[in-house]
Length: 182
Image 1 (spheres, one colour):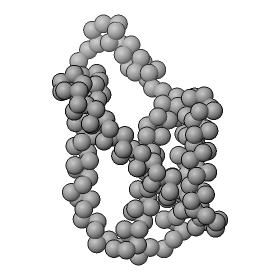
Image 2 (cartoon, helix red, strand yellow):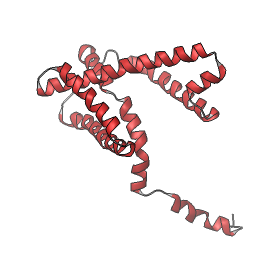
Image 3 (tube, one colour):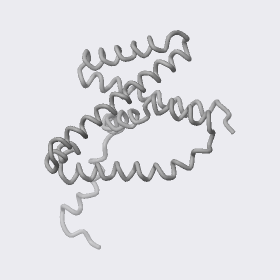
Image 4 (cartoon, helix red, strand yellow):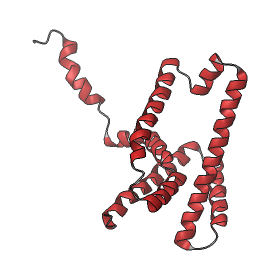
C-alpha cells in the first residue's frame, strides 16, 4: 500500500525515537523491581525454605491451584483501579457502608503488621544463622534501621537504595549455579 501523507512517512522514524535508552529503561524499571522484590519478602522465603526442607517437592501441586488464583486477584485489583481510577479502599468507601470499610482496612493493617513482624524476624534469624548471636536483637536492630532509613532519608534517595538492594535477589540464581540440587 503506498504512503499517502507526510505523517505516514514520518511514523516509523517517530516510533524509533520513542524507544527509551537503556538508562531510561532502568530508571523506569525501579518501582516495578522494588515491588517485585517486596513480594519476595523474608518471611515468604523462610516459609518456603522450611516447607521445602520438610516436605521436598510433595507440596508443589499447590502452586497449580494457587498461582492462577493469585493472578486472578491481581488482575481484578488492577482492573478495578484502571476502570475507576481509585484503589480498593476508595471504592469500598464509595459503594459500601463505613463500618465495612473500617473493618477491611483494620484487617489489612493487622495482616501487614504481622507480615512485617515475620519479615523482620526472618531477617534476624537469617543473620543469626550467618553471624551467630541473638536473633531477637538482630530483629530489633533491623526494625530500627528500617525506621531510621525511612524517616531520615528523602524518598528519591531511599527509593534508589531499595532499587540497588533488590540486586541481592540474583543471589538465588547464583546459589542454583553452585549448589547441586537433585
